[in-house]
Image (tube, rainbow, N blue to C red):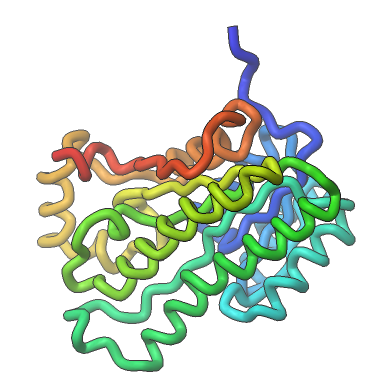
Length: 253
């Protein structure tokens, strides 16, 4: 019989963790025994998460995922607080355009790619550098989206960034495997978060999603957190370069 999934003795960084999926992942990791550094741009919500999870187990570091220097500083802060980093969950994201792809302006384009793609790369690079310096195994989990797997009408720019993340995940999985660093992704479907509130409040869109989803509902953050916990843990020690789709069956319907 396999032991229960746990993260005892592990230190994790979770970006975009002030609410929604990121907060749920941080809660799941702490419950599984990890020490967690949570990060997001706004300090208020982040502090509340750390306080709720216990400041001996969870440390809040406000940081901007779309800035290279901030990513390096976040990893350094995690090492300073807990002595090391074993797991990275790249979750911070933005979506600045809802509409036809050809109508995206340059400002929205640049800001979205800086956070959703460059930020993931910068964080992965810094954590991989740290793990290699310790000659330590580790796990990187990249939160993407099913919009990176299929056409994403009206959300094309966001979908493109998520497709880039899936490509990055596969390449990093191969390149970091000799260092015993696993890299996997999660592709959630529609999940009940503030980030997705505009979609959930659009009844036409919501009914379309529910009709196409075999389970006839949208997800909740804890369901994504369970996937992240598995991928981060030693229970997934033989898994790398994989995209775990958690979408109620949307992509197979």
